[in-house]
Image: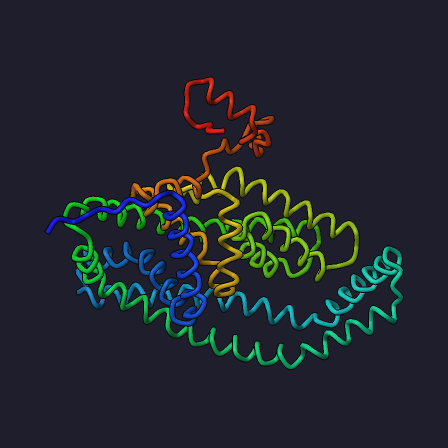
Length: 381
């Protein structure tokens, strides 16, 4: 029987793509409690695959024991990080009266600004805040308990899923081989290999980047006489996962819980700006070094959609999932335009006194016309 290949007009293809995207996001939202631990476990399984191979070849362990040893080492590593964070949080809670005093001072300054700017009295501000707080108190308690139980369940499920995914790795590969036509097996192999490289380089580089950012931020905060330097360094490293917005939120948090002294606040801002410059100029291009480049717009939108679908886990998964999708799109002819849309084809930086800065002229009409005159087809408009 001869297969008939249907050709659809562009608007029909666009409608189908948008429908599929909508269905996928909707399914992830409805089944996030099942999908998110599985996706995180899949990423961790790809990251731990070289460790399993090491135990197989170097120590001659059976496959099951090699997988078990790799997962146990990973769990011990994560537990040690959690222990470090918990020790810092305990010292943080000991100073809650001082932190509350600092926050109260910031709160009063904001009240003064609102009164001077919008002519709203202190009593009206307090009344409105009390109404909002009382109306949301019950919902806040319920959501806190629900989120805690979900997080505990996910913490237990992720190592189990990671172990099983590593154990049945060959089963999944054979399933994909049976699912795809024989003529497309080479493309399938290329996609799997590139996804493995992308995930391993991205997550491993991300962990190294987070460690260096936490270290630099803690050292810098020590020099400017800030408090809770290790905890704030860890918070900055985690929030830095969100492009551009994360470092801003980390700066605001550090300023709020520290002293109201202007010199300390200025020092915190200066340290975060310096760390951000080091991150953009050295850490990201040299350490993260992913083979798939995703532009900042897609990254931010993906992180926001991930937060909407699955909260913090969705934010963590957004960028690697976008990178995986781009690998697939770049290998499928019908989806290549979408892969190009997700990419970063603009000039990244220009040099100013040996410092790399963002190229503010990238992507404007004059630059595109110049590229077109130079003989390239990069400029379409």
